[in-house]
Length: 331
Ligand SMILES: Nc1ncnc2c1ncn2[C@@H]1O[C@H](COP(=O)(O)OP(=O)(O)OP(=O)(O)O)[C@@H](O)[C@H]1O
Ligand SMILES: [Mg+2]
Image 1 (cartoon, rainbow, N blue to C red):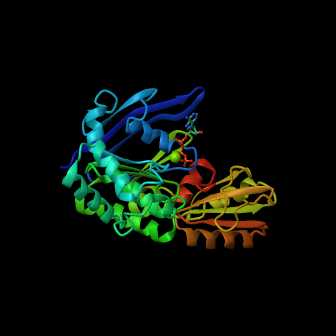
Image 2 (cartoon, protein in one colour; image 1 turned 90 degrees about the vertical axis):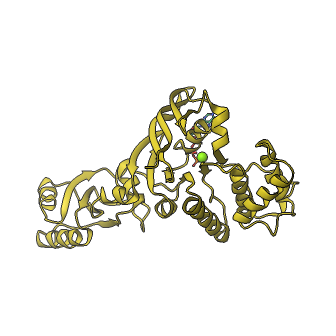
């Protein structure tokens, strides 16, 4: 049985009155890719900063490999790799010199250092350009060198903070494949933050959804999506009518139906502005999306209820987030 590589207990970080991380607890199992998914300002980087010892938490505690991240930080640093959101590279040095600098911090010298630097640069596909100054690289290539730097000490747990933001598709694919290989071939545990739900869905065994410092959902992508059942239908109607709501809720493929305000309605995938033209928005959680839609339309047709707008939300992680917070993961 593999053990727990990371355990975070009730982590809190305050900046004055702002609670950037608010009572966050989760665990990462050895060999797991764990995703922290949340919009800008959710508290992802602050969580990583506390877990990697950049600053201590205002409250709560955490262990990595059984070691306390505050009291035993020196030992913790030996077993973690950190790839920060902001690049930490010297632009006038080349890739080999940059990664070599990190290797020296971990006590590597001479041939061992040279071999390890080449190994990690090869891993991220940057060996060919290793002698060029970092400032001549694309954003994606810089990210890959940053990833190489985070790997130099053979970490058991790797922190990857939004590694694909501002990255061209080719480098992005490279980063994905590197993460998948590190996990599969080396059993490396990974904490991956992103606000792209497709990335979290593809890469992560389990996902924690974070918003305004709070962990609001936790589970496998499938568990989180299944919590939605068959997706959500939003109908714009002329006025709220309890008879209509109750009749819709009684339809076999419908789980629940309630009126929401325009602000609380979920922005649609196609139509980013919710059904504000309707005076009432009936939010319908479906058991089976397609069946529910047919049944709702059939009912509205039969009793002559005018539908002013219609939004269909697929069951996916974006909808999970929207449903919990009433806002989009994207900005
Ligand atoms: N040094 C700081 N001083 C004051 N407030 C801060 C500081 N760093 C972060 N914050 C605030 O803490 C909250 C969480 O920020 P954090 O950087 O952890 O979010 P994030 O989820 O990483 O967002 P992003 O996706 O934009 O990187 C935000 O409201 C941010 O403005
Ligand atoms: Mg961040």
